[in-house]
Image 1 (cartoon, rainbow, N blue to C red):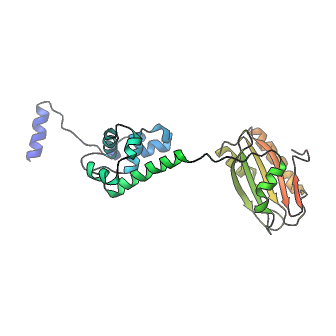
Image 2 (cartoon, rainbow, N blue to C red; image 1 turned 180 degrees about the vertical axis):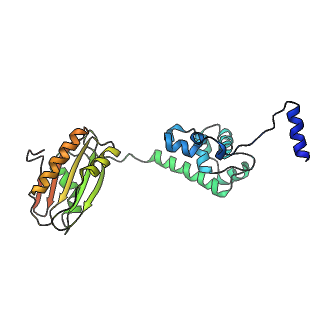
Image 3 (spheres, rainbow, N blue to C red; image 1 turned 60 degrees about the vertical axis):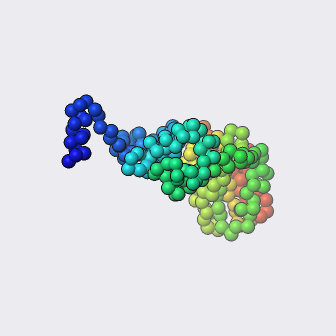
Length: 246
């Protein structure tokens, strides 16, 4: 009853008792995890990102309050925080145990390694031979058909290589909607469709022609360039672009 009487007395005297709110009590759009999902990681402050790593605070403070305290102690500098040892984090901050300290240290180390890593040079596609050299090792010796998609930027550098489908000896299913979905997700400016003919004959079938024309029209409507459709075989390859059919 003493604690209750103290709060009543403070209120009567005009003092507002300090109340601690858990992040779960916040509006959904203000919670760090939900904010990241909705607005992206770049919308979060360093303290909010750190709060996500912490996961929880203590009985005295929320994860975000704890994160703010940790950042403040490091001069709001991630490089300085990265110099803090696991043992120091545990000793200095109530609510940070070995698991949380290791998580923080691991995340900062990943950031350090990312900065020091070289940017992977993307392969640039200049002609059908480049496409053939890139994928022939995956497609030449298959006993079934597979369809692959090359996603490229506006300089025709490879952004991603994706297997779209695989099927029987004579054909595989190619859905233009699936192809465009991948292209749009990666914001690709150009694509190349590739598949193999296990028969050894690289010449296109009437089905290949229909798929190519259908995909070309769909890409044009989405402002994506269908650069080529290359058919692989053990006896060489066929390029729609080289034959003037795209």
